[in-house]
Each structure stands twice: as C-alpha cells, then as structure tokens.
Length: 240
Image 1: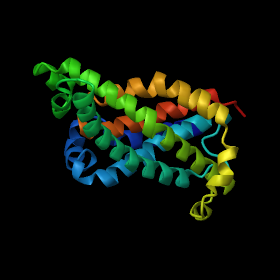
Image 2: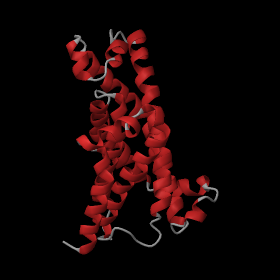
Image 3: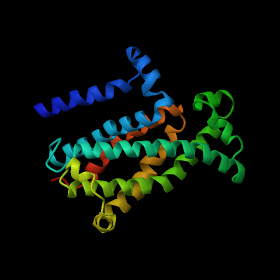
C-alpha cells in the first residue's frame, strides 16, 4: 500500500467518522448533523464531502492518483454541495407528493399514512409495512425517472466546465456555456450507462430502501451512495 493510500484512508476515516452511530457523537448528530432545522447547511456539507470522496476514489481507480492537474477538488465540492441541497428538496417534495398522488389517483390506500411513520418498522407495527415499501418504491421510481436525469446532466455539464477551466476555483465562477458543453457530453455513456443502467439497477432500488428509513438520514445515505456511484463510474470509464 502506497503512502498516498494510507493518507487517503486517514482522510476518509476523518470525514466519515461524524456520520457513524457512535455514542460520543450522539449529541453532535442530534443537535446539528441530523437536525432538520439545519437542513440547508448539513445537506450541502454531506454531499460536498461524501459525494466528492466518490469522485476522488473514481479518479484513483482510473488514473492511480487521488488528484491531478485540472481536477478541481474545491469546485467539485461546491457543485456537490449545491446538488445536495436540491436533492434534499427533491426528497421532501417527492416523499410528500407521490403518496398523495398514488393514493388519490392510483388506489394505493394508506400511502400517505405509511409515509407519516418514522420508518418501515414503525409502519409495520401499525399494519402498513407493505404499503410503506410500495410507497417508497413509487417515490424512488418517480424521482429517479424525472428529477435524477436532470440533476445528473447538470452535474456532467459542471464537470466538463470545471475541466475546461483547468480546475480553477476563480474561473469556475465564470458563466457556464451550456449550449457549447451540451454536444461535448459523452451521451453514449450518459444514456446507455448512467441513465439506462444505474437508474433502474442501482438508484431506484437503493432509494427505495432510503425512503423506508427515517427522513433525517436520507440525505446522508444518498451521499454515501454517491461514493458507490463514483466507483461504478470509474469502472465504466476507460483507465488512463
């Protein structure tokens, strides 16, 4: 194991540690990290650190390095932080809206009530465990077929913008030429792998599980899933 690998493992441990269910962290997690009153800040921070870790791991797998010229670590953290906020908003909107939709128009009785319980276990104790599972699946499906492709495409656009600006933080804040970047996107990868494979095979099942747990943990779970996605994308991309 190389020195850089040991250093990364240390950094990884430091970043992940605050999210672990450890007794001495309970007060911090309850008062801030998982406190819905601070959702704006915590959503940004969770994705800025955890999802960016996924990209760093992906870079390591592809190139053998944890950083390279033009990678733009800080700009990537800013993008992921912003996306983390939109993901939190999407979670709230879809978790509230889809149960109402499917209960009123698709005959899924008890969908709203099942999502009102803290998690699938509490719903099961009240006879709505199966409905909670179905509701979670439908929420995940609707969200991943509508919001997710837009979010993923926006992320790819910013990714290309960061690379084109040489990873510079200052240049990152220049206007993004979306019209020029759009044709540059590798649509074969975007459509055939990211959309057609990761959404039905990875994201819909994983987010179904996510919507079965308590709402305060959903964003951090999604951020951890971002680490996994970074690895998946690196495997699908040609190594340098």
